Length: 315
Image 1 (cartoon, rainbow, N blue to C red):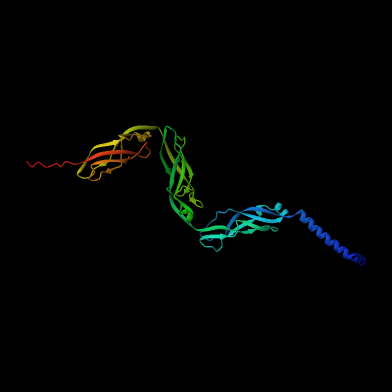
Image 2 (spheres, helix red, strand yellow; image 1 turned 45 degrees about the horizontal axis):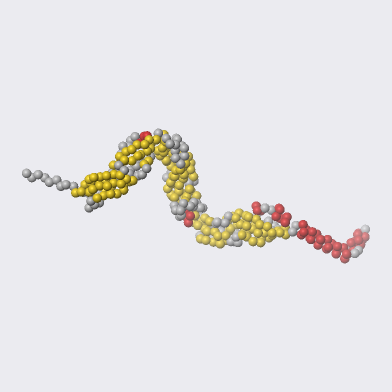
């Protein structure tokens, strides 16, 4: 029985081997035709790995484009989540570096090209800086109301991030919208860090990122016209005559409780220089907080004369 089976395989052995090889070649051809090799691209997030301790990596590139080649079925089977791209910073020191991305791909893919081929990474020391908070207001409260006070829950915050970016921070501020409010309110506002050109500083964070602001609004808006009192003095041995202020009166506005207690507005103190016979200058008004004037400057003029010497009577 076994002999008969062996005789079947041995009979026409050469023809059978040729047929087997031909069948295999046909299978390879058909498979290549049905699942041909093709090119495709994936956009993959760039991951920073092994950053040195206490150094902050700064990289403008967020994604890498991978040009790949693989059988068509692979492009159906895998999406961008199957790929990983790393910028390995192990062993690097502070400063600027050019890093070649490292790519991990599923089996069956050939990497043709990465775009970009290298990424620029800067390693910057971690820094922090205390900065005062500015509160800006937008809009206006209701016509019959006035802002009495704006209070912050804290005076300073900490700006944290790469040293080269923290150093560019010019101010930290938050914005409060007053539009249409008629009563006091409290809210939390986010902090914003900008440089001296009012551009937002990237790669930094503010601690805390939000603060509480309380706005005291008082109903009952009042206006009043009050005289201006110049705080002008002359050097020893001299006196001022014909003192004139322009304008002599100004209109003030604010909450009833403030306006009712104000009867004059004084200028900032100023002493005329010795030897100056005629004085004319612009002085700032001392305006109480919560009071509004159209202009906080007035023009003051005066003549400077010698003070008469009073002689004693010897008779």
